Length: 277
View 1 (cartoon, rainbow, N blue to C red):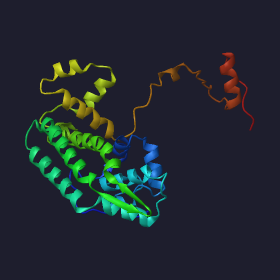
View 2: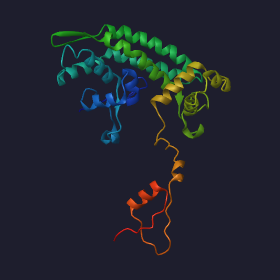
View 3: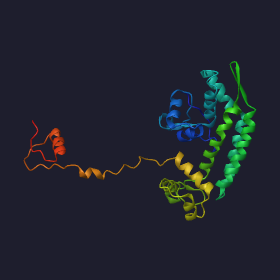
View 4: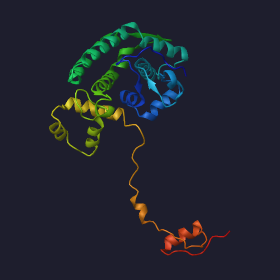
C-alpha cells in the first residue's frame, strides 16, 4: 500500500487517528483497520513513524475517497487507477482552498480564551462552504458519473465535530504538566470524562466549574473518547486471590505436585504426599 503524502498538514487537514476515522464513518476501529489492510483506505505516515505499524493516520481527502468507493461499490469495482482518480478529485484546488480558509479561521480564533464556542459557528460556516464547493464536483469512472457532494456531505458533520474537539483542548507543559485541558482553563479533560463515567450529571459539572459551558463539555468529552489516555488500562481488583489456599512446606520437605495441590484445594485439606522425582 502506498502511503499518501501531504506537506505540512494544517489543522483541518491534519491526519485523523483510527478512532476519529471510525467516528466520522460511523464504523468501529476493527472495520477501519481492515479497510487499511485491504488497501482501500490509504494511510499517512511521516519520518520514523513510517516503519511503525501502529502509527496509522488518515488524511481527510483519503477518508472521502474511501467513502465514495464504498458508496459506489454496487455499481463499479475500483482498480488502482480508479482509486488514483478518486484521490485526485478529493485534492482538487477548489476544495483545498476552502480547507485553507478554515485553517486560517481556526488559527485566528486560537488566541481567544473562549475560542471553542466561537469555533463551532465558524466550522458550521465552513461546512456550508464545503457543501457548496463539493456539490459541484463530479468524477467519471468508467461508464458512470459520481456526484461527490452526495457522498461527502453526510460526513462533514462528523469531520466538523472532530475539528472542534481538537480546537477546544490544549496540552501545554506549563499547565498541569502538559495534561490535556480545555483551552483557556485548567480543567483536565480526562477528569471530566472520568466523572461522566461515574454518572455525574452535566448540571453538577457546570455548577462546579463556572468557566465550563455545555458546548465545551461536549467537545471535551468527545476529545477524551477519540484520544484515550496513553498506557495500559488499570487492572481489575485481584484481592479475591488472597482467599486461595496457601501451601507451606516444612524444612526438609519435598515439593508437592501440582495435581496434589489442586486435589487438596478441592477437599479443603493439605496434601503431604511428595511429588515423584
